[in-house]
Length: 59
Image (cartoon, rainbow, N blue to C red; front, side, top):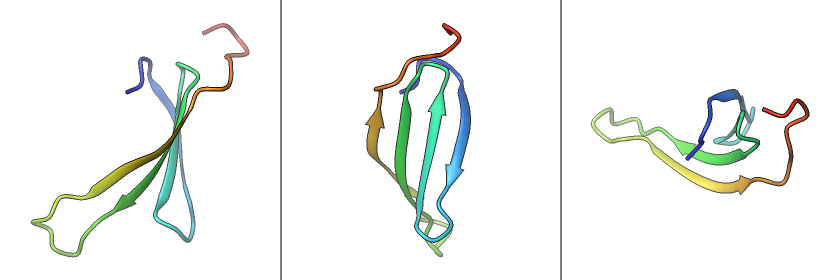
């Protein structure tokens, strides 16, 4: 879980992948799947959590 606000989300053009990053200096990579049956919940799986960077402005 992010401890601060999410500030960007990016989606892959061809694959069901997306990534999000937050002001807490972490980024998540997800696999997402939506089913044609609207009664079935979407499936979102976190594939990777990246925490190896630091904030440039100290936030």
